Length: 537
Ligand code: NAP
Image: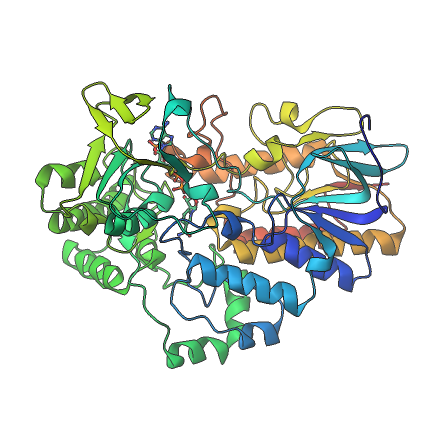
């Protein structure tokens, strides 16, 4: 590749990313005897949990399930302190894993991969770092994450703001003191919903600029009790197996057996209330038809709206916080602690930028059509170029020089979300077309890492140098992903699942709605048929 200023050892596998995918890839590939190195822009491991350090950041999948299952001793030894782990605790867990398996010696930090080009004659990927170094590898695995390309919206005047600017998706590592400050937060997605109550506790005044309200359920977070921990640890292998093989979400919830429309209004009320009181995303599993039938979904949506009205004292604010123009669960459900109650605080103002959009950011705050707002600190909680963004930032070229960006210009196309035809020996972990963001992502990561590493091992055993999905297998899978999504309400919302949060991004439903159980069976079946749909050379 032109511009290269040196080549380090030729690797069997180069991994881009040192989050939970990258860490497990290193561990597994090394055990199989492959040379592997991971590269990450960050200064340390952790991926999403390295960058998203905003106040209140925690996982919305329960700690006992949001962790690796591949090593029984690891899962028994590690002790989570709360039902929903904080970002620092998850990062401490990642550090523990890295130390336990001595993973960091095969990671290069502060190294951004800017390009990856495949040389057909040499059958090698050459990865180019942002510093102009080249790395050669037989296989390249993009462990780049689905929600790793944070984005600032394009708002006129943004560069003129004279105060401090922070981003939830790239929060400073040093403590940020917001005490007594006037703070403006743009965005009301999962990140903002976690950060807003914490920021409100410190800030002199907090302005929340909301374009679209989100549905949020209470976390009811609490310290884990020894009995609850034991109920998991005593049966961990079986429970993990069940999560992987028998659930759609890769997480064990109380799964519904009945349609919401078959239940009486009183039964529904009691069931929603019971789940609301228990807290967490379990709420969305109350009935079987909540993501497929609009009338069923509306019963859950109206329950949440009533809760908002009950908590939020100002009727106008409560109305603004109540989503009405998309079915519940078609955007990722948010899980909060005190979010709605925060709007009862005298120092918090909700600003409706749907009705009165932001015109520009000014040196002292921002201006909507009707009003000027002055603040000292601006927080962007404006989300990510999800699923494709991290790949889009790398110049990925196949043997004929064709780049992935052009191939995916009308939406991502990948066989099983794992490989895209025309890009041999390039794997993607939790790529578009796989359950990824609709699942407990660690469950999905483990399955993908095992598929990829087994495949590379299989190729070594058979003396095969090159794997590429067949175009028609990819086309069939992409059509299947679209069909399954089309059978649900999910494409009805302008969500990041659809690429709708990025101006100009094609509107394609990207993750696979079929469930991790069905997806895993499809993958296993394909392997059992000699990697059906893949071509080898
Ligand atoms: P998000 O859900 O995409 O929310 C971004 C917010 O910014 C939305 O309210 C959006 O409004 C607003 N926004 C974007 N551009 C804007 C603009 N130009 N002007 C005004 N408002 C704008 O992003 P996120 O909150 O970072 O969450 C992303 C995903 O990360 C979540 O869905 C979840 O999967 C994951 N996450 C998980 C956790 C957890 O585990 N607890 C926590 C945080 C994030 P519109 O809706 O109108 O576009």
